[in-house]
Length: 332
Image (cartoon, rainbow, N blue to C red; front, side, top):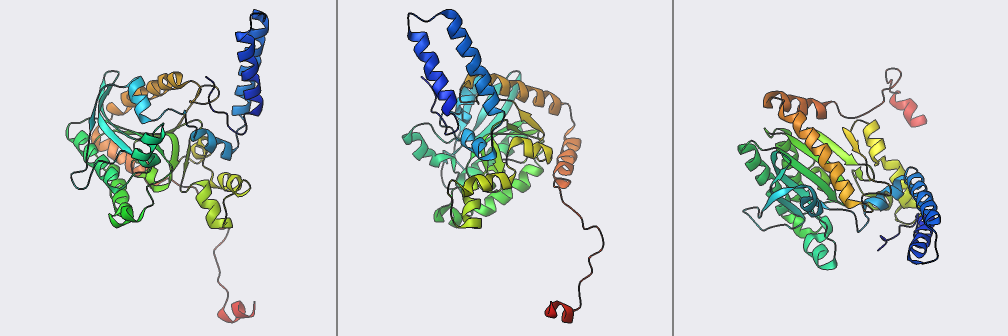
């Protein structure tokens, strides 16, 4: 079954349907099928190498894109889920649990959006509540107690924007997570696997290694939110403009030194080859674990501090700023 086609995939879908017809026909030659497959592969590779920022956002939101619990099934073993925040409830938008990847025991934290309507409703489409961030921090502290690395898989459009979440201290809990993760005495690996929206992503996003899948995005606000603020409307003109202005793609953020690595996706995105994406992600996670486990904790914390201390690109004025006298300013 073909994956849902995105708006920019018109040519790709037409060629996929042609290939399906040829493969189901008894009169098609093997050479013709091979040629169409080769042309389709080249077309997909070319189109996905030229994605605009807005098209990247659409890919990151594809309903067939692997989520945290899909990666649990594909690349983690012995997963034992941990529930609850000891205060309010168990937020299903953030999943936590002990697991094993390769030779390493880890604590896994990740957003879950859900694949069908029932699961999406249960998970609030990946928008976590305060109890989700409280749960994540409690489990990460438990990991530090047992000297287990933390792996955080980020995939959320943002924290839940409801009144109840604000009343229960959403902003304060995200800020607390940022502070506590910055000094948690155990290795932390963060990977944006889909959407990395606003404080909802940052709430589990402070780590020693921060990476993104090639067609994920990571931003202070969604393109729709940005467009609504700047142009008072989010439509097919303003959303692409906002996405381009936000510099939210993996290439942009790698160039700005906000992330450490771009993890390549299979041709056509992770939603076309989820098992291959799982193998690629597993390889990168094991590499990060081998690297971080050799660093003493004191040095690791200092490196983490310096990583965020120097982050950010800015411009300086060419010369000293000389304010005009008040009288001149008024006349101007």
